[in-house]
Amino acid sequence: MAVKIKLKRLGMIRNAQYRIVVADSRTKRDGRAIEEIGLYHPKENPSRIEINGDRAAYWLGVGAQPTEPVLKLLKLTGDWQKFKGEAAPAPLKVAEPAPDRHAVYEAAAKEALAGGDTGTTATTPKKSKKKDEAEAAAETPSEGEG
Image (tube, rainbow, N blue to C red):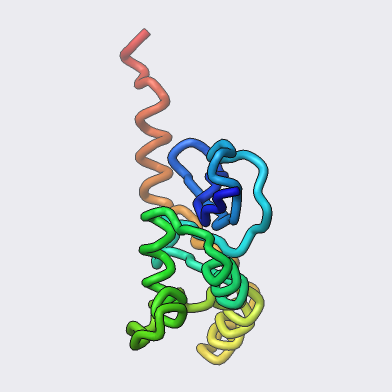
């Protein structure tokens, strides 16, 4: 049985997400897989690439052949160089973690209180009165019309 390491497509239209799987070469692209060994989400910035290096090394060691896109991903993560005994590449860029919403809110609240606000003002700005008056005048017809 010829075994390949290939990409299994998931996700919606124009939002491709892939799983890196080990499968028989005769199966469909999104068909049954022997094992899932990683993720690849190209639409994220930077692209999210997670590969279980131990499992990839095992499958490469027993003769599984990676497809071209998977080979490029293995080279980016350094798993291919580790398997071949070559020098490791530069580390991948990792997305910085998103800020905690609660911490951001608490910081904004402390800043507002430290700035002299009493805390009674609204957190969202209100519309300007000039703009509201101009809209009201435009909506009501003048007395001469009609």
